[in-house]
Amino acid sequence: NEEKSVYELLGEKRLENVIHRFYSHVEVHPELAPIFPEDLTETKRKQIQFLTQFFGGPALYTEEHGHPMLRARHMPFPITAERRDAWLSCMGQALVEEEIEEPLRNRMFARLAKTADHMVNTSTEAG
Ligand code: HEM
Image (cartoon, protein in one colour):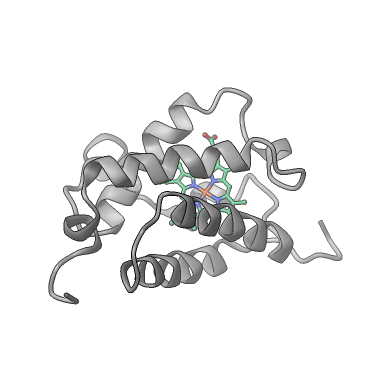
């Protein structure tokens, strides 16, 4: 199964469902809601494009927006370790609610956790 990409195993529809559920948690999370736009329509659209390519599907994000430069694109937002944990907790809930099966769920979460770690740009003392 490791030869198949996450995208192949998951499918387009389930990826979209996970992302919609994820943002339904983000938008009510006390640590996260304040740094996200009120209207998440465009945010969701970009995240669907990004995660499609991140998980081995077509390069939809790069086609429209160029190189992801994910860390750089997150620099305007103070991302503390607490916000990283909150982001991952919203994603973990979305994966469970969408009933993503093991070991696929763990494989997805581990990859996302690695990237989320890389997005931390603000120490708790400073932010
Ligand atoms: C954009 C927060 C981790 C992928 C954003 C935005 C915020 C944010 C506030 C801007 C939303 C907008 O203006 O529409 C966070 C926080 C994270 C985190 C607090 C905690 C670690 C991640 C991870 C990924 C990711 C792990 C991917 C695996 C993206 C993408 C965008 C984005 C693709 C859109 C970039 C663009 O404007 O083109 N994030 N993010 N983020 N985030 Fe994150």
